[in-house]
Length: 616
Image (tube, rainbow, N blue to C red; front, side, top):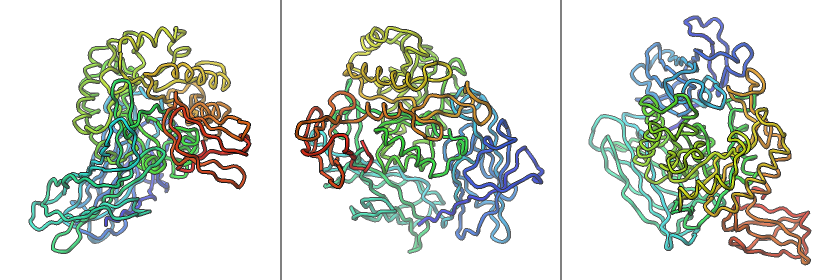
């Protein structure tokens, strides 16, 4: 199997060089924009490291992200350029300039200057512009041929497409590419097992495929007894691939995947055949000024745990995230929309440059993240002028391109202009009407009932998803008390609208942003969260948690009564447990609207846990 070596220790030097006399040692992930003296550096800095021995015929280096652009050199020779895409992972081959004897030195020149090339464009983005090697970097080697990538297709086979299921038949296929010169005698050995590489389960199937360099396909198979992936039951499987020639293993990889189906039909949203209405919250990574965008794994897990404990089962990210974020969501159950970071009104309308940048990024996103079961949708933009014909053409083309790359996921655009003309807006090109709802703040004092009525009248039988709502300080006053009130008021309205298939609150945390109205340097921020930027909950956090709970806990003369919500959120509860003191009681399956009484339990002294262990 492929063995990755983490490249965590680098020399760092701000400025374009070639002088390295001011270099110092840093540990990845790293950004200079949280450090004294370079907080406001938007330009070039350099990193270099000496590579460890890496036996093999071919060597590669993988970057989790280089923000915003990077040039990679080995022993002074250019091996790769990655331009205008600061959050997508990429790999560079080092083989042509690798020295078998002596020292191999890798150097990366990073430029985070605001630029019209790539996305985001110039300063049109609402998060920090933290430059650097902001995610992990790893080195590995292979034989003469390597497994370039592998894309898995896995889905439930539902006996009744509108009757929810947790297990049953599942279809599987995979396709990928073997990189290297055409030669005879290659054999691809594959196996699928339940679980993950860290926690392997039973073998499902295995086989061998004679092949040559270029593309390969594992033919479609149907298996019985498959356990479906769900946010409350995130069952995972692993595909292991090993490439052999004449009995020698040239390369090997493993990818984790899951069997799940999420589709939209009319105004209804179905997860594995069950109609659901889901609630979630967006988290803005990179916000703790102690780490910035260079967050270590414990910080990522801390914020994701806060997200999940707020009863979030659905989220979106305005820009592409670390592989480890999606790994966590796979394993703990959060549905995710990942978006290309095309945000705001610069340029005024989308043009060829933005289409080209989008195409480059969506291809990397699908290639690198396409096997994650947590990822349910791709986003092609946010808060553009989606009433402009040029932008509508961009959205239409971007949606079509994404569907061609990945026909199994939803594709959406997120609008804040639909109130101008609900029958025209570019949001209509996506699978869901994802709408940012700041009526009462950014969108002015509108008649909300009338505005929503106009939207629905112009878009009958379309599923609606308010994708942002909340209170941003200091642009608007009222503090956390008003933030909680806005959240409750918006949720109450959405519950009266059957077309609302889900909600995403904005946001979990106060966040650092280069366009923030409060603070300066690394402390520039917007106060928008139900926690502070370090993850300390405010009172509104409990309001979000309560409103997004799938059940209500009610007193009863016999003990405690649990009611499964049938409005928003709305989904079947399976495998939940109640804890009261030293008692642990299994809660029977509850369908929306059903209730259950546990006798002899004080409602104030009980805790409800999801099957994943998170408290409700």
